[in-house]
Length: 354
Image 1 (cartoon, rainbow, N blue to C red):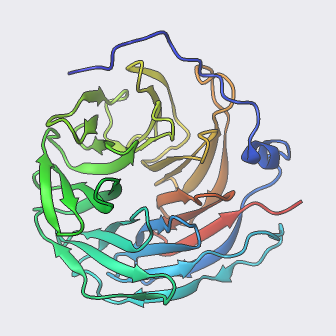
Image 2: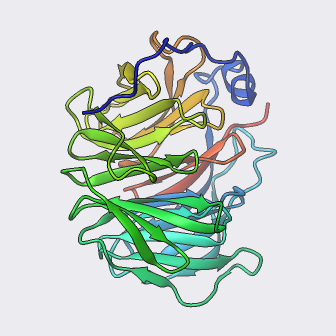
């Protein structure tokens, strides 16, 4: 097992203010809850949601095999008594896969959607947001030999093309694919259990979380994982995410534990347990001042990362579903998020204007 060389411990004291702090903490989250402003209902469990990079749209994939794209609502005048309205579906494609859609992602330029399924196929769909339609024939990638559990895009700045990282069950490898040709560039081996979650940052770095109770950091310029992080609680990594600075890993685990890990120092900062069930999503806010997490305990939790990260962190429930919450995703630029659930709904959440 390799570790990043320990250095002088970085200061874990965050900046004192940001937009979310001004709007949320000063008003008291215990008194004011996020409001579900939009809902979409499906016939079956909804497994995945993904924001377009502009935040104007979001993609939805479910066990019903359908791909939908919805317009994100105006949240400038949300009220506490805001009625939950039906989502505005701008595009839908039935039988997008032969199996359940487990994961989805938009490329950085917002003109390509990737979806992965238990039919062992990845589909790349060119999408024109100006005309609200898919263009051309979907590209199908069939080199995985098990369910595709997650996928993320990188942008090749040199060739101005998208690169896709994908992982899942079967051979438990991370595949790197040139989206222009649909050709796998390499298969990165190391995990011994299903890959559940992926996250990328910094142009050539990504991390994978696995059923084998490890998270592995990868550099596309290296053939093997550059760092292996064992589970702090002996529980599988169900979700992984790295903050925008590339310094902090947050991971959600099957036992409900969330870990914060100092990437440069190669050490665990702390573990805490905001959930009583499997934590399937953990996501940093834009400036990493907050962590959004969702769980099979039906709850969505916001954890405040201001102050000293070595001390106990305040967490509060900010949303709930009637069944397991499978994914949560922050809006790219606004104080809002989306969640999807086994209760067959997707909700858009925002804070009321006071």
